[in-house]
Image (cartoon, rainbow, N blue to C red; front, side, top):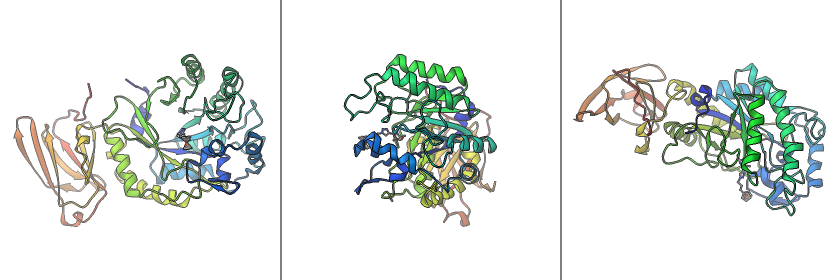
Amino acid sequence: MYDTKQQWFKDAKYGLFMHWGLYALLAGEYKGEKTDRIAEWIMNYLNIPVEEYRKLAKEFNPQNFDADEIVRRAKEDWGMKYLVFTSKHHEGFAMFKSETTPYNSVDASPCHRDFVKELADACHKYDMKFGLYYSQAQDWDDPDGFMQTKENSHKNFQRYLDEKCKPQLREILTQYGEIALLWFDTPMGITKQQTQELIDLVKSLQPNCIISGRAGNHMGDYMTTGDNFIPRLPYEGDWEVPATLNDTWGFNKYDHNWKKADDIIRLLLKINSRGGNYLLNIGPDADGNVPKESIEILNEVGKYVKENAEAIYGTKRVALYHYELEWAQFTSKDYKLFVHVLQPRMRVEVINIANQVKRAYIVRDGRELEFTVGKVCEGDGYIEVELPEDMQEQKNYAVCIEMEEKEPIFEEIQ
Ligand code: H79
């Protein structure tokens, strides 16, 4: 069973992913060719030659990127508990000062800025767990890095690992204080032994650093689902869903397919009810601006998360997830069952309750609610919580049903 042994990760439930690199300059378009596909893959699917793509580094001068502001928002407005930033995506460009190669944002770009440092400082200031994405296998810039569509790709993959990947991992794990999480991705072409070497390196430098489920060869400290994939049944142990707000990770000016705040709230709770964390992405543009649509959605979701913090952070999966109700999602903590009411209701009814109910209340303001309980048979009860008239038109609030026994009610999966 996956066990990160890191309580912060088990309790976090909601984190911010940030994809930002040279692809933000192209924003889904290269020499008149537009794409509404994932923008950070543009070098690959438009076959942009390395020398051409490298020229982007000389244009990279984001005036509006404000790490402090993003981390403050994520922590205070959006209710997120950790941040994962793309220190190097498949394009191969390092967003930090690297002695390994000058192809980095300090040495190759007019901004001369170390974005890993800026974000690390902000995360440490706001007490936000700081994680780094590092594309360990795919590197479309290094001749020996993996690139599926390139001829002669990864001929000497071990050289790439020894001369670029490992030295850069060493840099990001030694220069920026605590790195809580290392997010490896798409482990194409990497052997079990090579994966083990990378994991050993990470752990030797930062023993508490958690490694994502995409290190390669089913290794890593937790299960990472497919992009935007929510399992119907819960996974055992620790797991996380990486997900987008529209249909791209890196900024794409042609992608306007934004999900609604209500959709995101439902997805978050659906994941939490199954015991997982939601790692939700933003992709700043080339000037460093976070898309205003992202900010609006995350502000609205954040309001729900902060008002209902008790019913989100530190919660455990609950057997009731399988109800698949339109109006509700469920989470639990010790002897409390939380019913997240997502559509207007006259009353809240829950069946299959084995414990004695002590009280019911609205999470965001503690207001006590009337309820009746009954029994279908021994050990199988139900509860009906009456909602006050002024609540009956509302949606997006949580009701806590507190049990008499101090026994955990969350589901243990055998
Ligand atoms: O970092 C984000 C993605 O860039 C990365 N993982 C998340 C977290 C990712 N790696 N692989 N994929 C996503 C899926 C790749 C799908 C592809 Fe394609 C199909 C690549 C080439 C064919 C999509 C369609 C991109 C180009 C065409």
